[in-house]
Length: 524
Image (cartoon, rainbow, N blue to C red; front, side, top):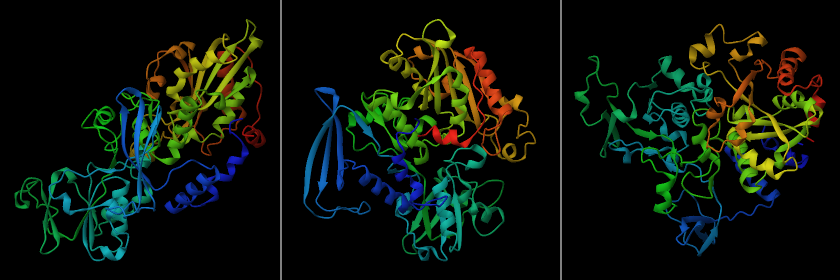
C-alpha cells in the first residue's frame, strides 16, 4: 500500500479550509489539532537557548532550554516576568527545523529608522494618505505594497534585483500572480510605481523634526544624481519606509564552533550548508527539516514551503529514523511495471510540488536465471539523491543476492527551455501535440530514466541534476504533457510507456485500461 492507513485522512488539511489560499490561522488550528490527535511529545513555553557538541564526544549534542511557567508572547521584546527553569538535554541525533527566522536587514545607511515586515501594522488607517516606499522585490514586498497602496497617497517599490515572476519561471518562490496587482498600478500609470533603482543604490536620511524620509543615491546627495540627464526619480519626502527583504537562517543558538561549520561562507547566510540528503555537511548526525532544506532545490521546486518540504521530511524520516525504505516500497510482478507507473503518475502529489527532486525508483531483480523469476522493488516518494541508499537496503532485505537487472526512475519536470514570458505565453510550439515527440513537451510531464545497476554502487553526494545527467543513464522516456494532467489513453500514454518497459525487461506488460477504482485500491 502507498499510504500507511486510511485513518490519516481524518487529519487532512482539507477538513479545515476549502480556500485555495487558506488563512494562516486555519493552519495554526490544524497543527494544534494534529499534535493533540497523535499525542505528540512537544514541549511548549520553552526556548532553546544554546546548542553545542560535547567536548569529549563529538557524536553528542548538548541542548540548553529555558522553560517558562506562563505562555510568552513571541512578539514582545522582553519576556514577561514569571518563574523559569533551565533544563539541559543531550542527544546523538539532532533534527533542526527552525526555518529562516532572522530578518534579512538590507545594508543601507539609515535602515535603522525603517520598519521591518515583521513589525509593520496591519491596520490600514496607519497608511492612509501616506507617501510610502517599500524595499524588496519578492512576494512579501509585493504583498506589502499591494496592501498599503489601497489607502496610501502613493507607494513606490524598490527591489534588491528586478523581480522574477513565478508564471514564467515555474518557481513558487518568485512573485506569484496573487501579488501582482501592484504591477498593474505601475504599468497602467497610477501614482504607484516600481523603480529601476535597487535597494543597494540608495541611502536613507531620516528627518526627526518632520518625521519624514529622504531617499538619496548611496554615498551622495540627491543633487549629484546623473543618469541620462534626468532628475533623481525618488525626490520628495516619504512618510514611511517599509522593508520586506526576506529571512536568513538563525545561527546564534548554536555554539560558535558549530555555527562556523553550518555557515562556512560569510556571503551565503540564507541557508545552512547541507548535503543532498539534508544532513549538515560538516556536522555528524545533524539533519535539517522544513524551510531550511530549500538550498538543495532553491529557485527550482517547492522545498522551501510546506506543500513541498512535507514530502522531503517523509523521505528523510524513512532513511534516517526507520533506517529502511520498507514502508515506502512494494514488491510487484514484472508484468505489472507499466501499470504501477501509470497508477502513480495519475495519483502521486509529490512529483507536482517537488518536480525533478522527488521520484519513484524501480529496481528490477532476477531470482534465478528464468525471466519468469523477475520481479520489481517499487520505491515511491523517494529523493533522487537516495538512489545510492538502496544498495544497503537491498543487502539487508529478503531479496539479498538477487541480481539487479535494471533501475528505472520516474520524475515530473518542465522542459529547461520553457521559461520566460514570451516562451510561456506566446511561443506557437509551446504545446506538443505528437506523443512520439513527448521529449519536446514543455509543460510538467512524467520523465522516466533507465539506468545501469551500477548507479546503486555510487557513493557520492550527487544532486538530482547529477542523476538526471549520470553516465549510468542508458535511456530516457517522456510521456506527453496532458491538458487535464490525466494519463489515461491506452495508446498515447499506457502503450507508449509499456512498449519502452518491455524492451528493457524483456517481458510483456499486462494491459491496463484506465479506471478510477484501481487508483483508489492502490492506496488502501
